[in-house]
Image (cartoon, rainbow, N blue to C red; front, side, top):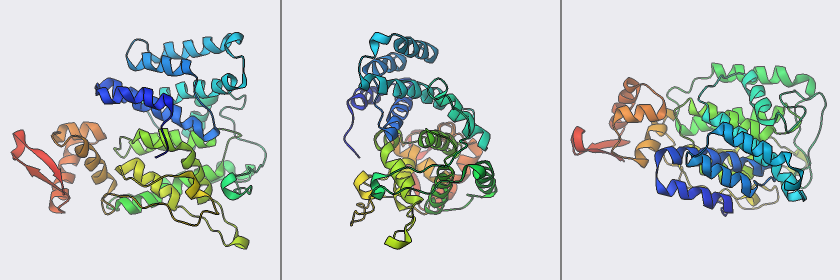
Length: 352
């Protein structure tokens, strides 16, 4: 993990206190603010203080939006470049928090476009609009070279194809390793299309967080909060090839990110590892249970945090039916993944 920013240290205090409603809000804010780093944007102190008031329940999200909008209407509030750069970070952070606090979700390209529009309305004049030109981006990890993005004429057909293929794909009985490889490829594909003029990485991240929640995962917010730049760099490496220099598309960096995101693994996510000139592979971490299914890993994540949770509580936490959870946990006991100690009433789950 990279060194925590000052804002991250301040907000993480609410997680240490352990108040459930505050913990949930804090995790969303950490993800929302951390994602701004993909474009080198930093939040203002005013946003952090306003976020604290929301976490503490003193104001709601509507009041947060009003405060931030009013703050940037006052020209004397923005006297230097740093504060002007913070305006986008602040406004988009609020909108990400709002979107991630909303449990509704539709799996289609329209949802992706809608997320972009919600995130960047009032920030970009082309919010929610598909780009109508081709472009390149110089990448420092590629020594100034660029990824080849989709031609603007093919954006919608490419998105529709990727989404249709994902809809047809079944994760049933797949190991966590197989599932993560496929999820990484889908994420990489929709990012490579790069449908918008700006804000593609943040839009992709928000969409994938909401999609992964449909599998029952409570996303490890620290991974996005502290490694959003690595997330973008890993997407670059997953889509870059240079035959002349014997460099090929490498999705392994993105896989490490997803392992940390979904299974509390501890791969080192260092940006320098993603540079094409870096000669050593990233330090290996504990990938937990590679042979588990996505549902099994989601259950393991929950009981790792609280071994005394009932199956009803586990079902509610991962968004699955109690019947499904009971069936999976019986299977997990048969596979020697978990065990129950000290009986039903006062017992606890043990991860084997």
